[in-house]
Length: 455
Image (cartoon, rainbow, N blue to C red; front, side, top):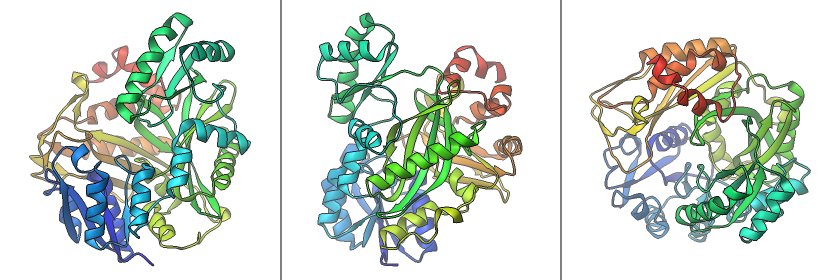
């Protein structure tokens, strides 16, 4: 292993996850922390801690100059960016590599290419991967948007070319709506990403969100099967599982093969995820974007394949070639992850930071809780509300949902509100149990009083 010391340029549960993976490989860990995070679980577990700035993310975790200066001063061999923050920022990657430090992820050129949705779409087309019918390049102005929408056919989805997380997205039903929504989407994209460029796709109203985990070493690429991420609220994933429910084997084989083809085309190195929309009615799938970093939901893939993805990231970044072939990877059983957020789902998901006055994780061989929590921890209001991810695995999907219900019943988080009630209600819902949902299902169910009826 080339990497002897690792700088973790992130926080929360993913920082804890990275520290554990690095320690298992004998790597020394150096945790970046804002002034608000010095008492975090990640700081308690790391071998060393470097304070990089004040609580505000823009002045700490998102400050490229401050983070790179801390990395250089720490003497780290490598930096792991986790997800979010600077994980898909090509300028950060270039600065890290210019400092002579290994970046745990693909190079800046690959991130720039695949992080821009319009460019990634072009690469997918060149690789023979199906894409959602959409605009030919970026939308130049409102007149261009009108022409593109007429060619594609309404309804259409306007999307920000840079960024993600549901920002800069608008569903447009007709030309009258287009006049208002294009400027809105541009303004939101400009504010969120500093880039107001947009593109347009056909809107599939009852689409499922399927993604494929890949791992490459720059030459060889393998897939680790697919994940289902269709249960979403405001285009944020709530519940993820592997493998996808009710997915024909023919489609599974084709979608995984297409992910490998695209990753090979761009000589992908490290872990990445290719996201698709799947139309259950026509059994068509369409590539939509690639995430060039570890995903929040990676544990469900680990659960069904037995491969530690974060350790694999470190090994590839350290110069190892893939040590297994596609035929060596087998998917066994079924795994589900639910995101536990510090929010009150019964009061419109109002944020609920505060002091943890009681905490206990569920026990069990097939139960895992990736978290930043400990008893007495003060959750700060500055960051994302995710406080943990509850993962269960079983021989089949029905058993996994039963295991999830039991684990939710025994998970103890006191002092704040969490989204546990939402997940309990979902686990008992017949449509969820039968795997009959799509990306708009959760909001429709909640709008019809589904959660309050179970609370």
